[in-house]
Image (cartoon, rainbow, N blue to C red; front, side, top):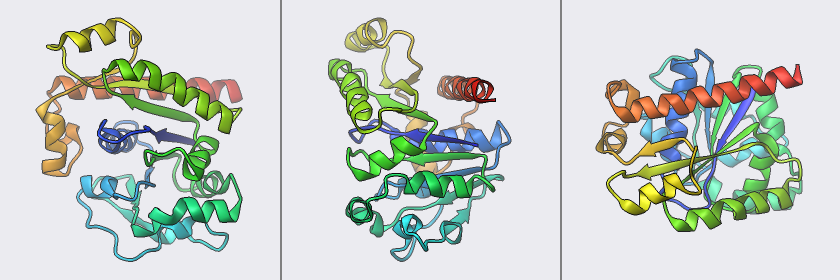
Length: 249
């Protein structure tokens, strides 16, 4: 079992698109039955996979003692990939979790679901609150997409510090440089500076097409450089998970 979180403190960095892509590669490329768990109230993960918006307000019930998360899971048109969609109930989830006072409800639910899903990918909302605390306690690897901006040089240490304060035994953090445009001098300087060695996801129209087509990029642009970059990122994630499993075994 491995739980992977895609997390950012701000929106507009391609977080949900990346979560959907990584979940699809887990199922389609690695052959692992995979659950994409959407904790973002916007509900973009299921939408990008062509699913209709969830009707009702039950998604947050997965965190309750008598919740039945398996009843909320729906299949996608891609073999081996299912989704636990978000809905409006997620907007009050932070208050619900604070009231419950249990920091590992997500971890327990993920452990329960792991009997069916050896890979769980979580699309996290861009917040630092009770929800992010739950995520930090549950995931085995945290992917953090950041734009090629000088502010990102400050953002990543701040994220690490916040996570360490909230979760002393925090998961490994893998920063990803997203929305990179090699034509821009500032972007090149960021890549050769503090972001040297990070995985890079270029800014490209093919990524925008994932929303227009409501499908993972590799299903319609397998030839593209972006697909090559995304597959390289997934290969790196699998390598880190294999190393973790070897250390624990």
